[in-house]
Amino acid sequence: MFDNLSDKLQRVFKNLRGEGRLSAENMEVALREVRVALLEADVNFKVVKQLIEAVKIRAMGQEVLSSLSPSQQVIGIINEELIKILGSHEAKLRFANEPPSVFLIVGLQGSGKTTSTAKLARWLTKQGHRPQLVSVDIYRPAAREQLAILAREVKVPIYAGAPEETLPVDLARSARREAVNNGRDVLLVDTAGRLHIDGDLMTELQQLKTLLNPVEILFVADAMTGQDAVKSADEFHKQLGITGVILTKMDGDARGGAALSIRSVTGQPLKFVGAGEKSDAFEQFHPDRAASRILGMGDIVSFVEKAQEAFDSKKQEEMQRKLMDNEFTLEDFRDQLKALRKLGSLDSILKMMPKVGMMKELQNVQPDEKELTRIVAIIDSMTPRERDNHMLINGSRRRRIARGSGTSVNEVNNLLKQYGQARKMMKSLSGNMGFLGKKLGKMGMGKFGLPGGF
Ligand SMILES: Nc1nc2c(ncn2[C@@H]2O[C@H](COP(=O)(O)OP(=O)(O)O)[C@@H](O)[C@H]2O)c(=O)[nH]1
Ligand SMILES: [Mg+2]
Image 1 (cartoon, rainbow, N blue to C red):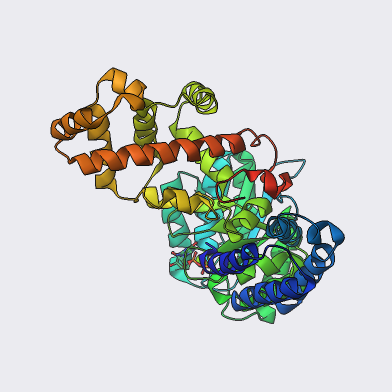
Image 2: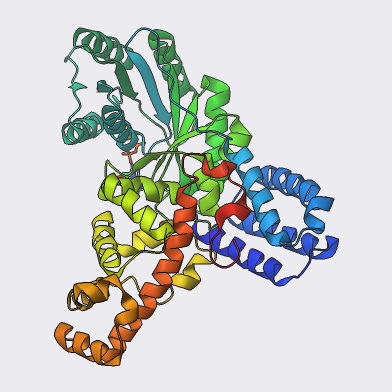
């Protein structure tokens, strides 16, 4: 999602880490590089300026210059300032005191309004709401059909409209009546867009706003259009008053600048991010997690949320205890690998892991499904005692295991080495898990306890 920016910042931090101590001079150089990286990611220049100045003031302070691990502290400061810019805390949706809460979905043509409306309906359903859909895009015949198809897919009712209802307000009025009659608590109104902002469109949206009194007016912005998306969001806000932004197409090669600028420029929060055409490629925007991703610290919280779905929690607690007590055996290693596979491709998991430091430990663990099968086979060929205590596995045992699993002694050796590394890595990860009750952003970066000094 922020891969490019993240890679560039990694490089800056790596250089910083090389410096024994921070001086005003090398700080200046590093911050200049951070500035360039942000501008290249298409972040609004005012936002960049604001960020760099805030970081400079804090990072030049005595606290950092005299510190033993200055780069760590600088990253911590950048992290905090990034979170501030992204919005400090996640912006929750508002709901009306009296249902149905009306959400107006607005934006330019092709930005992803219809797709996001369906995604949001699905998301709301998962949260226990009972949404109702309606499309008031009367200009393109296929537009309403498109939402109807998506509605079926996400299993949310849609108001189809009567032949005499030719105006957006007519459709919207009836849709609201239908929502009330059917006890739906949220009405999502997918509106028409234009290629450019124009008066007619704004008048139409204004009429819908007056009629429906929506609690949310969500502007859908296409991340691929970078600063243009930010500009239109601002324009819509001035003319209509938006309450939040849904940023779509973050799966493309968007440079991430829009995500970083929207809050500062419009004063309105980013509420959701779309990262794919499918209806489940949609998540709430968490400023603290996004900052971590940008800084290459991975998205541990998202990872754990995903993991909680795949691992059963009792077993996980047991595993935690074992990790802490250094009792993590080869058998546990195999079970963890098996559970990991349930999480998705190894590639996608690795993306959520902190890059800094962690990657070094993972270098030998190739994200290769065949390799996983081989590892499981090798561990299966061990005796229970060997799995319990890897120290027992001497040369002749290694030969026997290799034969039994159809692999080579070399591969067995590699596995044992990886296991040793995984033990170390898991141990440091499990240290982090303990913090997860708290917000990631509130954690001092130095407490990460990650291998590689972070
Ligand atoms: N890759 C990607 N494509 C998206 C995303 N959101 C929407 N799209 C695609 O963008 C195109 C326009 O979307 P649509 O919802 O029809 O836009 P609308 O004109 O604003 O209603 C469609 O081809 C969608 O599949 C996203 O998050 N990622
Ligand atoms: Mg549409």
